[in-house]
Picture: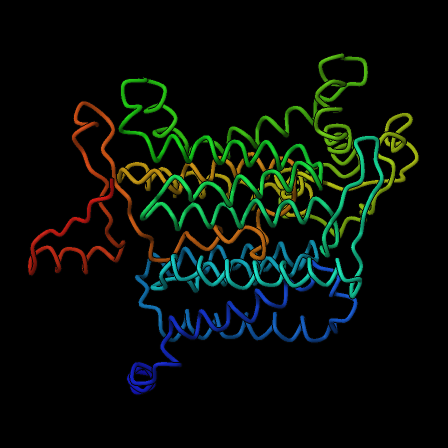
Amino acid sequence: MQKIKKQVANSRLLKPENLYLITLAAYLISVTIQTTTFNAYYPQIVGSVIQLGTIAIMLVKIVGFDDLTSGQVIQQLSLLGLIVVVALTSGAHYLMTTVLLAMGARQVSFRQILKLYLMIVGTILLVAFIAAELGLIANITFATSDGVRQSFGVVYTTDFAAHIFYLSCAYLYLRAKAFRLIDLLPVGLALMVIYLFTKTLTDVLAMLILLGLYVIYIYRRQLNQRWFIAVILRYAFLAMPIMSVVIVQLSAGFNYHERIFLKLNTLFSSRLSLGNNAILAYGFKLLGQSPIYVNGWGGSRVATFKNGIGDLTYFYIDSSYLNMLIAYGVLLTLVIVIGTSFFLYQRSKANDYLLPIIFVAIAFSSGFDQHLLEVTYNIFILAFFAILPRYQTQIGPAFERQVVTQSTRTNVATEQGKSQRQPNFRRHYE
């Protein structure tokens, strides 16, 4: 194995980080194409082969080339074992690919992952948009009381909006390194496209939350005298557990006889009644349950229910939290929600607030869409083991005197060794 590692180290193409990025690129191309109407021309066997190849390569990288402590080996084997059980029980085999890609991101730059994601997913969406406008592929549209909703070559309007939202998250994360006010323009235009052409209120709200919190993060020094700014930044890591509890409680407690529930249900496009129906029909299992039939292709949500479960014409568990609880089980849901919150707490504890505030918007969006664990949408699920840039700002009495510094997260031993050999280097961002 040591000889193989040396040979790999001498080969630029086969270096573990390059091998990871090449594999991730192939997987992203495959799964993103399947979210567009190009999927009619995309052989399913090709997607399955790429998925299996991704799993195999990630296992080789993790086992053969990642330096793991005994504790890390136990943690990763435990998580992988849980994922295998849930995936086999629920039929959601993509979960294994997602988790292995996250684990395999160890010693890989998260900025490189984001750049690759933006290039691949952004390019495919642009090509799909052009092809749909030229009539080469289907441009699925829906006539609603709010007007015509377009998907621009993606299989559904909300999926197109979700793509744009997550692309905006990745773009803003990268631009934080050297932010200029004009950098907000592309995200503003993306927000207008979602509002005017997809008419998906939840994605509009998620984009507004993303923009608002990002501006707070960028201008935190100028806003430091407002106490709530520090509160928002410090406790952003709690967004996912709070949002998951709120959505589950509202869905479980939904009642057609309560006016407030009816108003919220209308605001969230019948998601509360759909969630309540799913809970009544399937309940929660510890390790998930067999595949659940859904029908999400534009049925009339208003006519979905009569009494109780009723005559089903449209059924889809839009919320990631409810979908995880019902389909993937209580145990995996707790691991994901608590694990994500703990990871973001560690970032906040190190005075790095950029990732937590982006996850606030993702946590909100995940309350109303099912894309939290899908890499083609939420690329931030790969951040947990990757090498992260660290944008630090102290919040407290020295707030306005502190500058933003960037460093790279490595293992503790490496950081300690560097601190002994070289002076502390800080890069300033105004």
